[in-house]
Length: 290
Image 1 (cartoon, rainbow, N blue to C red):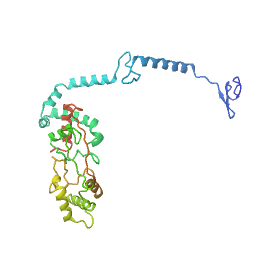
Image 2: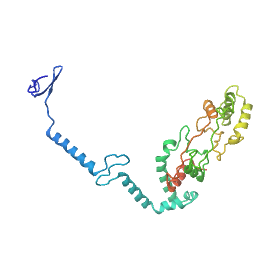
Image 3: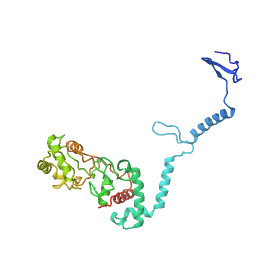
Image 4: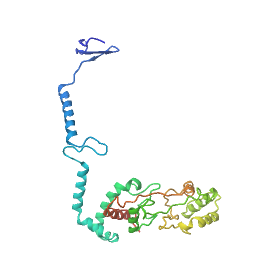
């Protein structure tokens, strides 16, 4: 340590008296304008705490002298937007789904609102453009697990799939291997049979007759004798090359062994009727509809 009156020979400034490994700390005060600015920000922050909501409490927060709320501002803006839409939204709710697509103005409104709602609520699973992903259906094609008519799409959006809602779709793919219904060799055989239904290659030595029998005994009840599926049960069409989880042999074996029971949430009560109807129209337009 050195005396704080020491003057650094290089800079000509006094030191603070601190020295480390021969390096002395210069006594260089902050500019006065900077110090005053710092004090002003402290005073400003105290005023901000008093005027605006700032401090968290046990179950709420301090509302401040202005009682300001950005959430309330958003609510007011949304209410004003609904007033502007007014009669158009009322008409959208009251018009049957099939008639909306016949009215260019209503169709444009439904698509615009549906697209915005899709981006906020559906895109995280189905993708921004509705192309889907593994386990999440592609909404751009015209293959629908639970039916692709307007009213069927609306029902699916409203009540979901295995969502817990009493009106939700409830069908599920059984776990034939896990439950001991089929043996591993039988599962591999029927997996190859399923691949053959859509024209995909099969494993060497695959027994087509055995695969057909296993399918008829265990799978046809839901997917149909010809594998075309059944929208009422949520049983997909196995004769196309579209597969929700994958159509390679390993994935099919996993599906047959452990089953599938994906969940889609029910949006009724979370989205207003106009938005659900708009979503149905928008989704229907993505795949051409049925």
